[in-house]
Length: 356
Image (tube, rainbow, N blue to C red; front, side, top):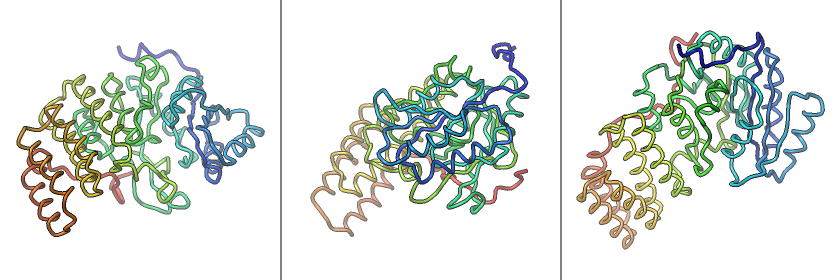
């Protein structure tokens, strides 16, 4: 029976909360306050700083002075980034369960208690996922949900992640530490955007079982100028990282035996969005790099490759907006809609029905 692999837990198991930080002096105090306010008290909070140049470290240490459940580490390995910090946090953790926060996320006071009760009952599952809300300044000032996904179907979950219709983000799950360590689940530090997608699909591809529970939103994801996750979704700044992620995602779906026309189409959507963004921003070298990736991976046929290369040539010699618009229309009709499935994004939903 699956539950045999999990060790016997104490009546009050320890929960490890891992937070990477970088120049968040004005916000991380709110995050730590929300951790301190938890109605479940047996937790440890591990903050790993990524080389802050403001007074973030001073703020964190002021909390450590009054509560020894909070510990602080500096990133001491390369590369720089939140993923490296989270991996350090996993290694430093001693809890039976793990959850991840960013340094501007907030928790409802009942968050740990709610998730832990459910995961302790669901003994055949490796992690549970709950609902959350976005917020602007303070919790409940927005009615937009994060993690509205309810399906337990692995196929549907994988398709949603590949479509950037993200079923859940960093702060929504609670994991069994034994499951993460036993399956060597870690954050890939080479990926500069879409880190959630890599981590969660790796977990699924290695057999971790998840359970969605429909209850009160128990966490809050900050919108606005401080947030970087949403802004990175279609950025081409880290194009090499995005192409590396595509390779990783292909390996995951192959491992799951999900490599078919649907998953290829969803990966193409991701890549074609990068191509389109590159053309719009006159980043022709990057557009060419995406085209070469599609060609090398045999994700599109030679005719599509020819059209993509032709558009790069045309856009590199004209600044006529009307002409560019005509060619973009041709591109979408001749290529994009032929290789990309029609599947709308639902990254956030408003006023989700039937939430208890």
